[in-house]
Length: 209
Image 1: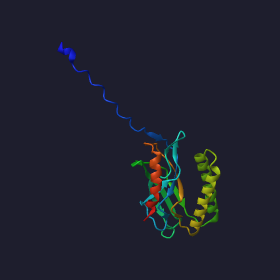
Image 2: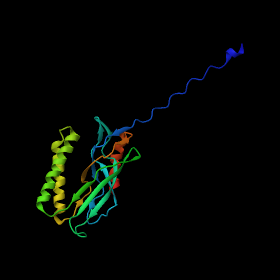
Image 3: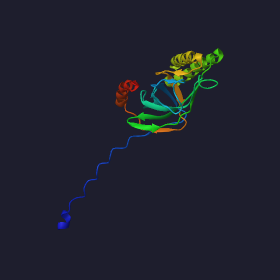
Image 4: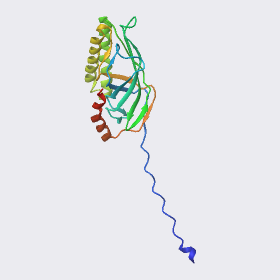
């Protein structure tokens, strides 16, 4: 009978490839960024944006989610120059977004605040705090092994601030490393290693004004 000659049912269509797995970086994670644009309390104004790059990779449970070198953007929450205002110079920074694999993700961080002072006691305290913070960050990044390196880097940053605050002005030159803390979780599609290497090669061009 002809009805037995009906064409067999078509095979099921192949399943589409699974979407890229998203990973959530928890709140409280430290973001160490390296400034591309220098910041000067005499020159910059509140509301201006600045560019930076991720200085240390962001990892979740030991797996690198965002390698170092990716673009970060933030803005100046507040800037006061001791030459224009009564009192100390103040610089307050906050991060706004990070670009990973061609996508831009909004981020919420705490504020990084630096006050200028011409008094040696305060400057010495800032150097000590910088070294302590550097040791903590270094310990986190290197599983304990990087604590000495972090302390040296933190101390060096503190020393730079000491020189900059002598005239009550605050200067954060390009290449300065600044630490922020995520205030809310960040969900991203992890970057690919090859993309990261290409990105790091292209990053220096971003510094051309």
